[in-house]
Length: 626
Image (cartoon, rainbow, N blue to C red; front, side, top):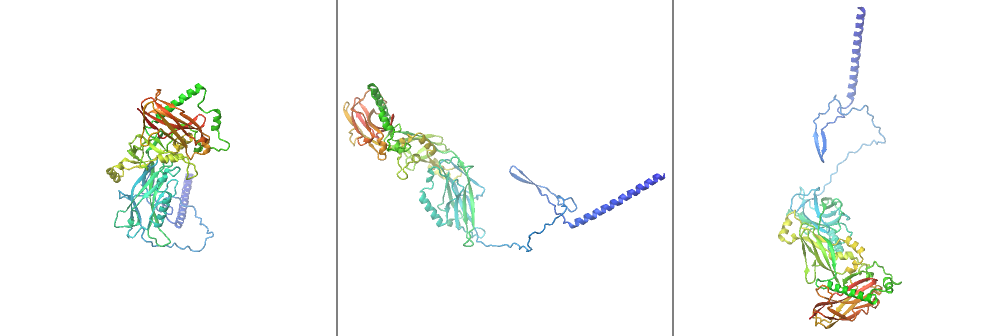
């Protein structure tokens, strides 16, 4: 019993001792915490969470969260620092920093330019993009803009200068299209007059930047912009032209912009306050008209009997070869002649790549005239009917039946007969080399316009509606494709360039008559004279042979084996090119049948064995046999 009582007493004393120590420890900790907290500012690292911002489908949303600010004694969002180390002052001056002093500068009221479409009062913001639909060679007219000046609250914000600048055109620097400054505008007009008569005329060339822009603002001036009585603003129209090889030169629609740069009254002569407004353009490529093919015809008219004469000439050559084989003679060149005509002399420096020295080296049959006929196929890939025209006033046709304009329906391809002048082989203005491809492209270029322009009522509707557009542009042969053809087929130059000779045929017809009438069985004398043109180098023609040959055929009739006429004398005469002063020949022909016949002659130039460049006389003589 004593032991149990002793143990219980010890345990009670031990528990009382532990409780006293625990209370003393809590009091000490409480006093230390209060001392520490008293030295710290309250709510130093406390943040208020307003909400959570979430982004979905390129849009941002704010989800609010209503939380109270953390009070003193509560748990902090960010734990308190264990200790603070003050930063030592190194190389710090003792001078006190002067406070920033505000400066106020009084400037005159400044203008504010409002840009909107002519048919709308809504101001165009900077983020709006205007689409421009362009095909190769097309000229796109952007809907007119209205420029208005906001004079500000005072009403005295006058505009003193306005510049319209084309920005971001590929391959070009920023170009000033319009300037109200008199000196700058005069200098710009002087440069334009010296360079080109038409701002879009230079777009016909190759290797140029893909886009060109111009502005049409005849009524735009500072007086019209600053006139408060009108209240309608000034209209301005822009045109964007594309080159024929625009292709894929524009990446992602380009970054073309129209910048309106303006300023008001200056606060002093040494400073100017400029502002700007920009309208972005997006280039969208669409389909337009194109020249799909070009076929050359040697005859200048549909009734020239060119095909009948060529067939008769082929039959004559066939009979001559049969006679030559029968009698053991050869109609072609001999071996001795081959070396003379194929190889140049030691003193000659003939470059086969030059056009001048290709005389007699290209096999073909041509007409010795100053013009050539081509069938040009134009495909209309637009959604509307177009009208084709030409700067010369005639798209195609012949002298008796010209075609001033040609109407082409949407989705249709037409072939137009075009008479073009033969291209000179020498360029007298530059270094002497003629660009055959550029000349042919310029001679065959056409202009096109939507047919809605021809109807005045429809044109008014187009002017008042933004959904309808009158398209226009230029169409031409692709220059790159044409140059590849010329480089691969060198005989192409002889077909379209000037003829080296002039062939003239006469049968004694009176000048006032269109044909010669003779009786059956009577003979007529045919004369031919060949002249060498001045541009042919003497060393080139000396290395050639010229054969003059007569030919006769029934007009508008297929070839027949029936002997309808008989030649008397030599129908063929071969002359060396060095004897070009004696290029005359004559023969007689007797007609055995009645009808209408044509008599002509050709000059066959050859500088190589087995190659004959045949040039027919421009006009054949007509004979009526009764």
